[in-house]
Amino acid sequence: MDLSQIVKERDEAILSLNKEKIMSYMNKYGVKMPSNELVFWAGVHKAVLRIDSATKEQREKSAKWLLDNGFPLDN
Image (tube, rainbow, N blue to C red):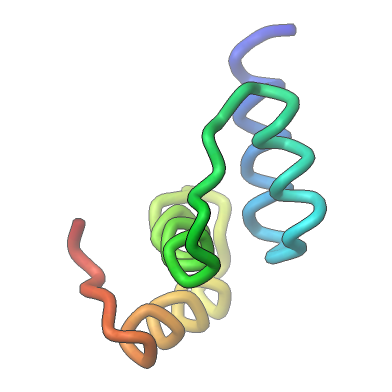
């Protein structure tokens, strides 16, 4: 599988905001899962902000979630 396919799968999983789909992707590629639920979702929403194919609405929703939950947008 090439890198573009891996990135496409990652983007689809993250942008779905579906925990099971995201966890399936993470397990498939050996990505370590945070044990804290809040940290998990913060990572997901921070990732949304960095995905080129994310819509303005998706980015705004993720930025709002991060700010509402006490996370900075810039790191």
